[in-house]
Amino acid sequence: MLEILYIVVMMLFLFGVTIFVHEWGHFIAARKCGLVIEAFSIGMGPALWKKEIDGIVYKIGAFPIGGYVSLPQLDPEGMEKVQGDNNEADRKTLPDVSPWKKIVVAVAGPLCNIVFAFILALIVSAADQPESLALIGTVEEDSAAYEKGLRPADQIIAVNGNPVKTWYDAQVEALLVGGDFEVTLTVLSGSKTHDIQIQANNPEDGDFLLDGISEAIPCVLGRVTPGSPAEAAGIQPDDIVKIFNSIPVIDWNHFTELVQTAPDQTVTMTVMRNDELVDLTVTPKYDESMDRTLIGVKLGGSMSMPWTLTGSPIEQIKSDSSSIFRLLKALTTKGEAKQAAGGLGGPVAIFTMIWFALKMGIINALGLIRFININLAVLNLLPLPVLDGGHICFALWEGVTRRKVHPKVVATLVNVFAILLISAMVFLSWRDADRNWNISRFFKKAPAAEQPVAEPAE
Image (cartoon, rainbow, N blue to C red; front, side, top):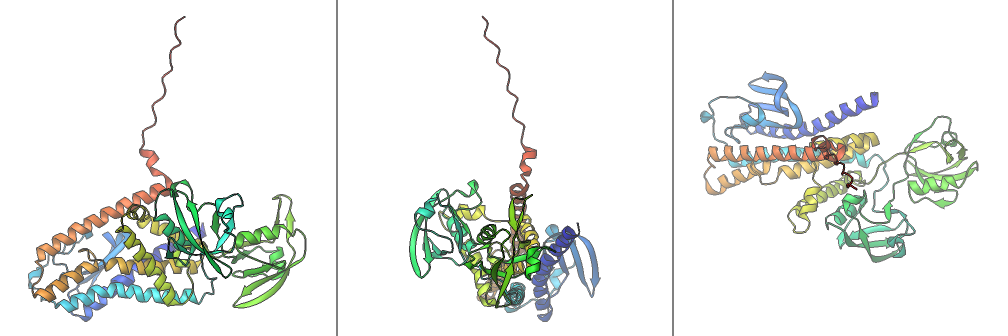
């Protein structure tokens, strides 16, 4: 129960900080540029809490899906109906603001998200996590992948000619092809590179797309059971297993298989701890009730997602940026758009990802928040009226033509796109919830009962 409470509180806190950082950027820039500020809100909709200080209303909205800074000189009529405000102040008397100041204020929000993401990347890079690569962990021996030469520890470096670094990248490239299809994998085996064509599954038919192979899960050790062989051997959480019983360890699944081969035998193992190799001696114990050989340690680390990438902060930011730009490209590419749209997620998906990231550890969660901040920055710079990019476009138009866009036009476009954006979020939230919990079953009619067929008369 306490773990659930911790995750819920941290989930709301981390996402709330992301929203706060973005809106704080707009707020500070607006104050420095002399713009009038009416409200600063974390959350949307009716206020759960609000307080007016020096003419600015600070509040927390009922729906934790965003936030806003009400700036009437950028958005002349605000989004009062959408945001739940009812400010009837006479905005006709407000002084004009130069286009460059409007651009500075609009850019400040995404810029703060990027700076915050860089800080998180520094923390992640200092956490000494194993490098996340597109390594193959297991290959089913009766699969076409095995017949074509794929083996455990092979690294996928490209899919259909598009370079990939992580397992997640490889999955995305395969998914964007769509349907039941063949993909070309460029594989690094030892020092040799070769191409292999492999059948991929329809994503609705299974969790993984590439038939017969699975990801190499980094062998990062987690919780050590008190009184277990692992504790007696001196194994510590975050140790990375490199060698077990003189055999190099490929991944977690390989490690568990090797443990099964040494019941009640004293063997040596080598782990990476704080960038140093440490040799240990452990005696796995056979558990009759479970019919398994155990050493008493759980998996740590995480599955491969874009935010689990380690390396320098710049590499992390580049990877996050590449992921969102690849998605945007797919959404506008014939043959990829349908699959890309199907992969979009809304607030439910975001909170679900944060939930599971927190269960995997705080570093994993911080990596995800870094990834979300980069996504938020890029998406907000798209040239849509309700987003920061739209306000930049309005300001550029004013700077080039020396004429302001009519306030009614700005207000209409902002409100229309706000409604479209909220509608999209509602749709995506419904779809995400249905995927997770199949809630649509409650709205389906039960099939009609079959009527008995009368026996023919003799």
